[in-house]
Length: 341
Length: 293
Picture 1 (spheres, rainbow over the protein chains, first blue to last red):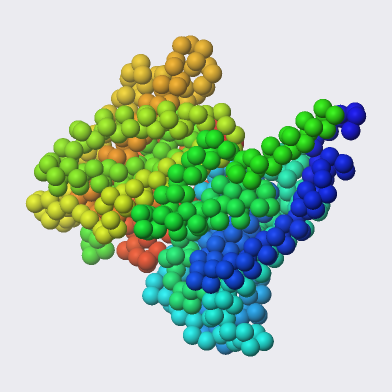
Picture 2 (picture 1 turned 90 degrees about the vertical axis):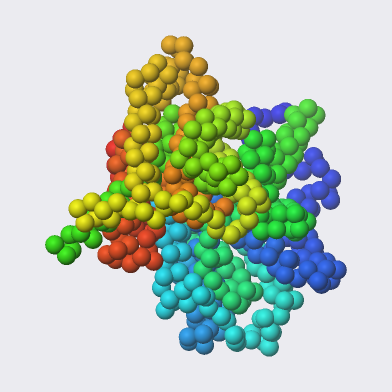
C-alpha cells in the first residue's frame, strides 16, 4: 500500500500485508475448526473433567448467544437466565407430561423463547441504556417467581426430575461423554450463527444501531426491528443451550436456573472476554470457569468473587474486554504498517 | 369493622417497612441524581449494614440502634473511598461502564460477606424484640416502630443537610448542572465522593434498622438492590421526595398484595408496578428531566 487512505480498517485485509498462515487463521471458520479440535482434545485427554467441560461449553454458548444482543447490538440484558430456565423446563415438562422426544422439545423451546423475546423486546426496547438493563432484570425476576409459584408447570421450589428421554439414534442423552459432544456442537452452532449474522446485512445494521441509533435511523435502518431480530436469535439460541443444561442436570430447580446470578454470569463472561467479538465470550467463559475451578477450595461457593473483581478490573483498564483489546491492537498495528509502507 | 382492623394493620405494617425502603431508595436516587450512576451495589450496602450491626452486637454488645452512631460516619468514609478509587475514574466514560463497575462491586461485597460469615441465616435477638404496642386495635412490634422513627429522623436530617446548608446547596448545584457548579467554584469531585458516601451510609442505616427484624444472609443484597430500583423508578430516578413516596407505596403494595392476593408473589408486585411505570412513563412518575441515561 503506497497511498494510505483515510478509510476505517475493514475486517477483510488487503492482500499482501500478512503471511498466508495468518490469513487462513483470520477466517472465522478456521477458528471454529480449531475450537472443535480443542474440544476433541479435551474429550481425549481430560476424560475425568467432562462435567467441567460441559459447564464451560454451555456457558460459552449462552454467552455467545447473549453477545448477539448485548455485544453486537449493544443492548445489555441481565435477564438471559430466563431463557436457560425456559429451555430446561420445556425439556423436563414435555418429557414427563407428554413423552415428547427431546429434539422436538428443543424446537418447541426455541419457538417459545423466540415468542418470549419478541414480546419482551417489543415491550422494553423503547427503554434506553440503564433502563433497559433494569427492565430485563425485572422481567427475568417475574418469570423466576412464576417458576417457583406455578407448581403445575415447574414442580415449584421442590423441582422437577427428568427420568427418561427418548434416545436419538440410540444415543444415551444422560451419558456425560455424549452430553459433552452435544454441548460442543451447540457452541459451534451458536458461533456459526454469529459468524453468518455478523458478516451479513443484519450484522452491519446491528453494529450501526449499537454505535448510534439516531444515525442508523437516518441511514434507513429501523432500530427496533434490528434489535428485535437480535433478541429473538439470542433468546432462541440461549434456550437451546438451556435444553442441554436441563438434560445435563436432570433435576431442575428454579433457583439455579432463573436466578439473577446466572444472568449476571452470562453477561459478565462476554463483557470480560470482549463484547462484539467472535471469540470473546468463549475466552471469558474459559478464563472464569477455570479460575473458579482452580480457586474452588479457597472460595467454595463464593466463586462469583472472581467475576466481581475481574469485571471491575476490565471496566477500569480494558473496557473493550480481552479479545476486544487484542483485536484493536492488531488492527492498529496493521494500520500503522499499511500507512507506513 | 372486621375487615378494617386487619386492613389498618397491613397499612401501618406496610408504611413502617416502606419507610425503610424509602431510606434505601433515597440513597440510590441521590447517587443517581448527582452522579448519574446506577448503583448496583446499593443493596449490598444494606447487607453490610446488617452484618455491621450483628458484629457490633455480638462482639461488643452494642445495641444495634446505637451502632448507627458508629456506622453512619464509617459508611460515609468507605463510600467516599470507593467513589475515589473506582467510580471517579469512570465519570466521563461511555455507556454502561459505571453500571458494570457497581455490579462487580456488588458481587465482591456479597461474596466477601459469604466468606466471612458463611451462608447460614443469622439474626440478632434483642430482649425487647417480641414486645408490641397496641394502638386502637392495631398491634405494632416495638422494633418496627423504632425503625420507622429512626427512618423519619434520618430523612429529616438529610432534608436539612440538602436544603439548609451550604454543602447541600453545592450538592444540588452539582445535580442540576455539573459544569455550572464547577464554574461557580464547587469542587464537584468532592461532592461526588461525599454523595456516594452519604448514599452508602443511608443504605447501611437501613440495614442496621432492618437487622433486628430480619435474618441476614450474604446474598440479601441483590433483593434490596431490586427493591431500591423499584422504589426509585416509582418515584422517578433522581427525585428524593419521589423515592420517599415510592418506598412507602412499595411497602404498602407488598403488604396488601401478600395478604389479599398471594404471598408467594410478594416480591413480584413491586416488579410489576416497576415495569408498568417504566413502560407507561418510561422516565418514572415525575422523571421529565431525565432524557437519556
